[in-house]
Image (cartoon, rainbow, N blue to C red; front, side):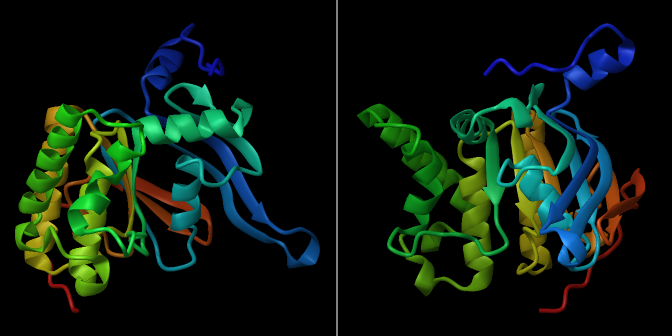
Length: 258
């Protein structure tokens, strides 16, 4: 993968070169002609190592599309998407898949758990998919999965299959799976939408430990910024446009209606 595109000839280039994610004047269109949908308009943003950035906005504002572009699940129609100093449009499909597997953990809105695998096995899956694990590596993967499930209050459910778990438990299993490989970047699409206040605090504490201990960066979407008051920056989307960028609001009590 030799698609390095950021020059270090200026202070801006040097700063950009260390970003985990950088988008420059990105547009995303679906379809063409009068029936086409312009989902994202001229988006420029970045995420630095160890930083948490929240993307806020109502349904249909473009949050999921933005996360999909950063996660290399879709490609921009126009503009540059740079991940780990690599211009994604210059990479082959295989190279994008390798980069995605090596450095990104995903939390999907739909959870995307494997129904015939236990909670622990689902959490271990990213490590298993990297290749045949030796016995010691498998033991380490099982221990790491157990620790993450315990930190998310799911020790008793580690052997349960997804159909036996409620939505809150499935969401926490999906979060543990995203973190198990200690990725450089976690992309989380409304990762606490099914959680009560106590579980939200558990998740945010776990995210903070990942930032501190492993330098993990987080790009998270939400319809309610109060759920991510620990984010360093909040990006506000409206109808596919970035309308505001600000430091996250001060922490306030959060009441969640389930």
